[in-house]
Image (spheres, rainbow, N blue to C red):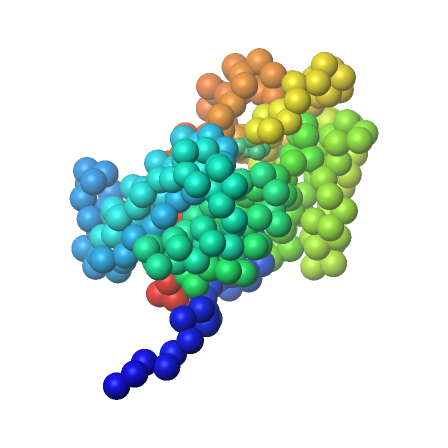
Length: 320
Ligand code: CP
Ligand code: NVA
């Protein structure tokens, strides 16, 4: 019998381009699943497969147009622990780097892999990839947002006894992609955000509006002390994101936003310090804070694996 199914009709797929794709319930399901799986594997060697192997036989293709340590390693290990496999495609050494279209790349990889993670610059590129792909597309960071990081960050906050609703999260430095996803998370999980940036480096109004429209308090200030006062969570990130210039004017403007011991002392005494890494110790964070007792940055980094697993399971319709 002839198969008359059109070749290029995409079935409904769950993309994870931003946190809102999963919604508050989806994110909550991810965090619960990540906690359960993390607990179940305590003390296990990292290569051992989870007992249920929910993604046995599945392949994740990862396309990187920018560098990565955590995202690359955690997705790879997450797929192995879930019973599947992953492969890395460095965009520069693929035909994408020689001008093959995103549309064709998406259609080809959809025939070979069960999901595609993409790290790139322009967010429009992953939207285009999602438009043409037949399998879930996961945002592994764009210039606009970094949703996978924030699932790990939320997990880390909760592990350190910070219940999300009503939490006061304070951000210092550049109003960048990571902050955008924190603001989107605030809208979904109902916490408040204080943002201290130099003038001209504020986050996009779209993300600020998202959190405010959801009833969250978002304070935008150029005074770091105001943002830190009484905060539960202190967060920063590099002053110069991938693809940006190390402009002297920007680095000068950022100096008052370094997270140091004096700034940490203004937050609640049990506040935790988060940084997605890689860190530039001495710039956005002092060595004392980075290595200090309130820093949970390596729990946060480990949690990338547990978070990626729940993101993958959500994308494959096995969660939420
Ligand atoms: N935090 C983060 O995304 O790290 P990588 O750039 O190393 O993936
Ligand atoms: N804001 C940083 C995050 C790196 C994980 C960047 O985009 O380079």
